Length: 137
Image (cartoon, rainbow, N blue to C red; front, side):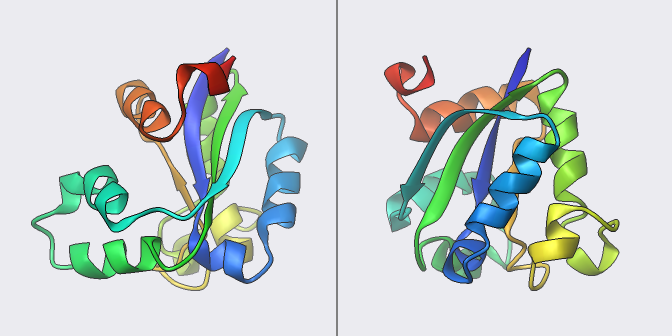
């Protein structure tokens, strides 16, 4: 079984879409290993998205991600990383396939409802960024 880090972003939490997104996650065969609601601090957002630091959208991304609580998740399933990214859909909801999280719940390319790790190495780093070992048992 593979694990991946996933996030329901502040836009989806603020608009009451958390339960519906969790339902879609479980209906697609994922097991929720760990979950918590957390308001990401500026320092956490800057660290988590540090790879984008030189990009023009970095400041607005940090501002958005600290604007309210997110739901942080660790999901498990065979091929979880690819399966979660497929279920999320394209970053821009206008380009996302029908039935994907972003097509159903995202507002825009910036307020796109969800985040997911893109590789095993990223999943490992992102998971321990927000979850302790004891939370993953």
